[in-house]
Amino acid sequence: MKIYSWNVNGLRAVAKKSFFDWIEYEKPDVLFLQETKIQAGTLTDELKNIEGYHSYFAFAEKKGYSGTAVYSKREPDEVIYKLGADEFDTEGRLVQVNFGKVAMFNIYFPNGQMSDERLDFKLRYYDAALARFEMLRKAGYDILISGDFNTAHNEIDLKNAKANENYSGFLRIERDWLDKLCAAGYTDTFRALYPDKVQYSWWSYRFNARKNNTGWRIDYHFVNSGFFPKVKDSYIMNDVYGSDHCPVVVDLKI
Image 1 (cartoon, rainbow, N blue to C red):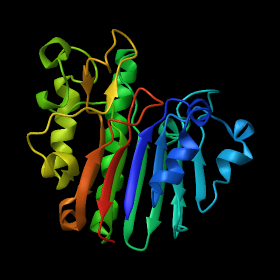
Image 2: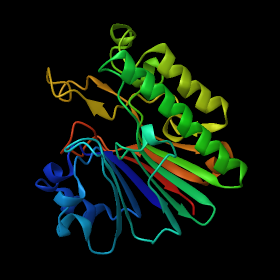
Image 3: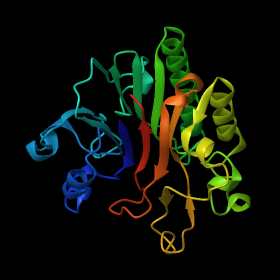
Image 4: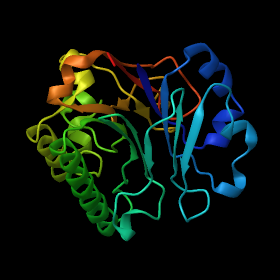
């Protein structure tokens, strides 16, 4: 089963490019999208009803902001749209789909750059999410956590580490949470398979960043360590355009 994750930075915008052709070519088993920037009233039939797929959308209350979506060939046994706390569930950041005893999370984690308050919100969202993962793992579920984490974990994961160590996205306190996630028994599938590979998933629109490959790896697929033997591959699709992010893929033997 191939699971793709892509921050599209506007679903309607990417749909005007080669989005539908890309889906037809790649044929993902499950496609997670972040930052869809749509509401129920602006969701077209074309976007909702892609042939061969069930679709699920979480909408932010704020117009044109955040939002997540899942397209799945197989109908999930359960779909959940909330993390479980009112403060976290107004921005459409999560769609969880369960297939048997496998819980797959599509999450657009908050960005902490706007203010100290938003950084605090991001860190609290991280902890609330980890509590959900752990609750399910202890209940016997295997866990897949996919999406835009809005944090580069280590120096290998961004072009200019030293210059960004005092900015949200590479603050020690944010990276500490990724350390905590790993210590809790979750594995970054790409880094586990390719420990020395320098590859990015996001580039600023400014300064010709993508052309110069001045990027960050902030889009991930994590699994609980017991699930990692089911990982066949995990890779980044740098040749796919249409957003400031590119898709990241995990291939699971399930």
